[in-house]
Amino acid sequence: MTFASIAIIGLGLQGGSIGLAVREFLPEARTTGFDLSPEHRARAAERGLVDKVCATVSEAVREADLVIFCVPPGAMGIAAEQVRGALPATALVSDVGSSKQAIAKALGEALPDHVVIPAHPVAGTENSGPDAGFAHLFRNRWCIVTPPAKVDMVRLSQLVGFWEALGANVEIMTPEHHDLVLAVTSHLPHLIAYTIVGTASDLEDVTQSEVIKYSAGGFRDFTRIAASDPTMWRDVFLSNKDAVLTMLQRFTEDLTALQRAIRVGDGEQLFDTFARTRAIRRSIIEEGQDDARPDFGRGDHEGR
Amino acid sequence: MTFASIAIIGLGLQGGSIGLAVREFLPEARTTGFDLSPEHRARAAERGLVDKVCATVSEAVREADLVIFCVPPGAMGIAAEQVRGALPATALVSDVGSSKQAIAKALGEALPDHVVIPAHPVAGTENSGPDAGFAHLFRNRWCIVTPPAKVDMVRLSQLVGFWEALGANVEIMTPEHHDLVLAVTSHLPHLIAYTIVGTASDLEDVTQSEVIKYSAGGFRDFTRIAASDPTMWRDVFLSNKDAVLTMLQRFTEDLTALQRAIRVGDGEQLFDTFARTRAIRRSIIEEGQDDARPDFGRGDHEGR
Image (cartoon, rainbow over all chains, first blue to last red):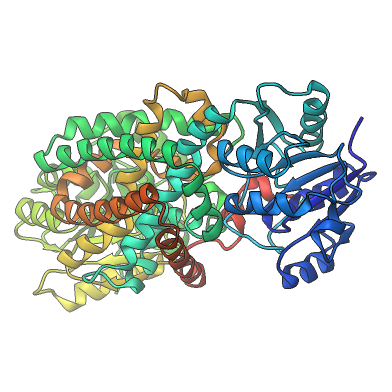
């Protein structure tokens, strides 16, 4: 029992990838899509991200039995309000947002008579917009589904089956726990990456061209995630404020301890901290969540 | 006028890569090598990292006209003292260390009668040891040469020519400026990456297996550089203390400002900060210092 008609609201990296993945892995399902930006709609139609790009959001959802909101977290509520009236009463409502408590609340308030099961595919690249999506984005990535406490198990398993069909591994979690886990594995890393890239651009003694030139020493790894969509990330931090601030506090304490070790010349503490971290990298590679080749297999090591 | 006999002290990622690069790009030069670890010497001989792996450091340098110290920053002085007596008086002394003021001082004190011109190839991977090296490590990477104020221009141009032959682009800089530039482009990123990976491993509410599982949300990018050699990085922070602490202070100020913006819900400040950082990434890619493909062209996007 799968979905026959899927509406995708927002045709950026996530929405576009879902559309392309449905075409490849669920070819019998029909997809419609909408994006606020006329330019994005035109480009989405050119790339064939969905079977039909609609001129209005109402038209996109009119026959849907699944609607997936792929807009920034702060726009979820407004987007959901705009489909009310046009969305069939039996349609399942879901999303791909990076925070879950705030989005579950916003979708539930906007569509109180619908079944809402939020989800978050933990997959992405630094690119955004209608040119960024690709069908295999979700392959071997986790998708976290965060159903409400009382959930229709049939609808839940339908949504799980959908994500599995797209190549993802699905995990069920409470929205609260999701927001804590993602605060450390995703939100804090992005905040720190944005910060250090900002710090490096503002120095007086070191020019921006020097920062760019010598970035291969480590800095360039941070610039990738700091190139992510600013609107989406603004919304992530505002919608997952408490968990992010908690994790940030822990990080700052640990950084202060290392700062003190450097100041007093405590080599032992530095070594002990640095020696602990290799095991985590090894596990991430073993679980297929990163590339084992040095430098992730970046192009400049082809000659190895 | 190039080098006929090159001694490489320390046969890890850097030393091994130099040996392999010399074989490929300067095939007429003879290379000798030494490593403190008998296991590393055996493996270096198996891989043919140098023409001859020597059983003692004196033997390795006896006929050298260039000796390159490829040991952790804190071991440079001791390693240099051990070649005194055996190293020909005319041999040029250099290194590949990541901090330059402290190393220049240590090498100069250990070998007061030799010409010392320190250098730092800004190239590396997260791997270390005799299996990590490869001939193309330096290709299209920068090598910063930091000569003393009064330098023999002939020797300097010999060293520059050596690194250019290995595929590097060479830049001349004072040791002071080098240490400041690298503090921001390399040392601070490593310190932050080590910290966040440590923070994530110590949480009570989020398990280590969850951190590993959902690392594709951003965290995994940090684990790569946090898997770097702990001995070397301990020495980098101890030997470039002042510049690292200065940059860390700037970073902490900027992070505190973003923390406050999150707490008070200042979306505009967050957006403005996040929107500034894409340009830097673009420049890094344009200058060939990183891979333009999404996710650096990691293996899991082959299907795009």
